[in-house]
Length: 439
Image (cartoon, rainbow, N blue to C red; front, side):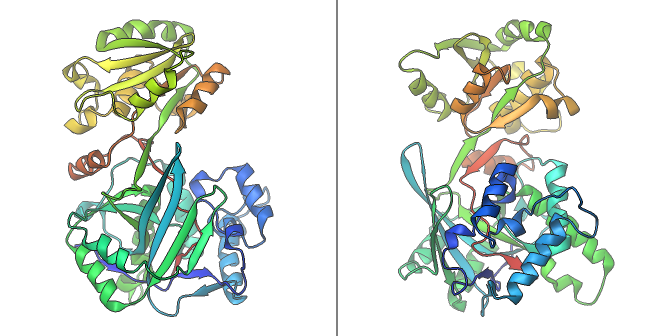
C-alpha cells in the first residue's frame, strides 16, 4: 500500500520575490560549474544556494556546501523570503516545453509519499545507481532536513480518474506561472480541499509507484531514515523523515518524454579497436549510412525514435570505425548473446539495446570494466552533439541507442530487475525552487 500525504510546502514569498524566473534553478544533477556561477549571478536569492551550493577550497566538516544550504534556508525563512503554506497541500505542476519543434505539456502531481523499503515492492526502481550522487544527497538530508527537489515517479491511471480530477482543478488562475532559464513554462496550483486530496490518495493507495528519475534521492532517503531510526527517540516512526517529496506522472501522460543516453568511448588501444569490426560481424547484420548524405538525419531520427525497428529487434548505431560512415547494427539472434549477459538479470534486461552495448560490446569486446569505465565513458542525450565530439577527436566511438518506452520500464521493474545505470533520461527535468518539503 502506498501512502500519499499533503504537506506544508515552502515557497518563495511573492511579496519579496517579484520575478520568480530569477530564483528557480535546475536540479542539482544537471548543474555544472559554469551554470552554477551563472545562477549565483542572476539573483542573491537563487535557489541554487540551497539545491547545489558552491564547494569552496576552505570547506571543513563544520562549514561546507551542505551547512551553507541549511543556513540559507533558515535565514530566508526568518527574512520571509521563503514562506510555508498555511494548510497541508498537494500541488499540480504543469510543465510546458518543446522538443524537436514539437510542444508538450507534462502534468505532475507534487505530494509526499511515505518511504517504503525496496523489498516491499510498493515503490519500484528501474535503474542501478552510482554511489557518489547518493552520498551527496545524503549529506544534504543530514544538513537541511529537507527535500529540495522531488523524485519523479510514475503511476497507472487506466480509467483517468486522477487525470479528470486534476483537470477539474485547473480552471482557476495558478498560484505560480513562470518561465525558467531554458524557456520552459511552469504553472503550479495549490490543492488544499480535503475531499480532492482524499480522492487522489485513495486512487493511488492500491498500486505501486515506479521511480523514473531520482533513484539516488530515494535511496539516500532510505539510508537517512535507517540512521535516524537507530538514533531512536520518541515518535521516530511518525517523524517527517519517513516521507519524501515526489512528483507523480501518469504512464499515459502525453508529456512523458524519455530520451536515450548515448555512449561515448575513448582510451581504447589500436589493436582492440581494429579487432572490433570482425567481432561485431559475429552477432550483427551491419548496414552503412553516409553521414553526409542528404537524408542522413531523417534516417537516424527514424531509428532513434524506434520507427524502423520491430518489437523484438535490437537495433543501434555506432560511429567512429569508418570515416564519415554511421553503421547500424541489427542483432541477428538473441540466443547468441545470452551467455554474455549477467546471469542474475531477467529476459527483458537481455533484450535492451543499452544492455547489449554495456555488456556485450563495451564489456566483452572492448574490455571496459570497473575504474576504466569512469575514465573512458561519457554520456550524451543528443546524438548530433555527440557526433561532433567524435569528429573533433575527443572520443573514439559513439554508440547511439533508442529511447526506452514507458511500458518497458514498468515491465523490468515488475520483474524485480534494474536496467544498467544511465539507461533513461526523462526530459525535461523539473526545476527546483517551485516548492519544497522541510521537516
